[in-house]
Length: 194
Image (cartoon, rainbow, N blue to C red; front, top):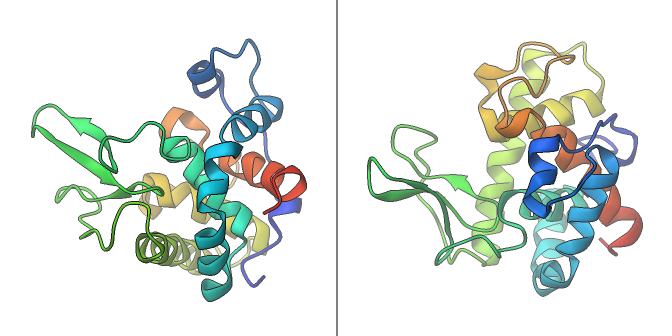
């Protein structure tokens, strides 16, 4: 796969804050693995479309699954396909399994397809690839795997918030987005059949 090997990307896994979602008494890679495993049953409902999109886009299917696990726990945390309720605007800011930013003041994406459709996953994967390429061009001296991890972080926080590899998650949700996603992707590759 042209964007780097997810299995050799360095990761510290989930933060304590993220691990609290499942009331885990530990954090790190072990917590990411546990949360990925918890989502596997529901994730299998999307396996064929994840694999189709991964093939079309040249991206690791386990990475798509990991973002779905992190973003919406394989759909379990969504309301009619939407997430991140904004009380001020009385609307939802994110859409779909991969939770693209539809807030006009944020990512401003116009959602395509049903929230759980192949069309949505294609759109979200294109957005992810866009961020990976932005990081690749911003940090040409990083290895492919570092650029991949930076792209995952910028999918969550925006590429303007990625300043160094050492602090790649400084501005991401719970300060661990790329580390948690990478660890979940590694679990889905080794244990989830992705």
